Image (cartoon, rainbow, N blue to C red):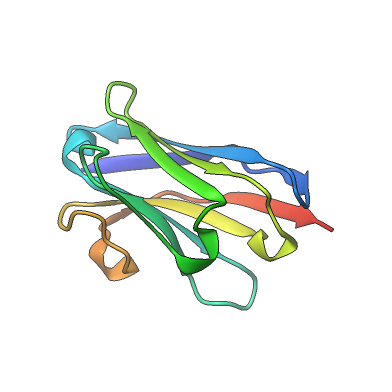
Length: 124
């Protein structure tokens, strides 16, 4: 089982950068694929990015390519999301999630463990 806690969400101006972290506890982090999702008010949860258990492969949602970078440190049991050139449309609650199956899963149905989320607000 994996417990996840996100941090780093804040108010940022459009064009700026911020970094989110997801701290994991539990025995299976290093063997779990990890992902970031987001949900804006009134919208469905959206896939942002995922990373394989060994960090060797990543996968991004179409709107995040070239602006977001996902990474992980299996020694620190932490996953990161570097967000650059953010836009007002990036405003959402960002969730990290862990998957016991799949290599770089993109469907929320493939994830068994979820954090509580961290709010990112981008002002224009």
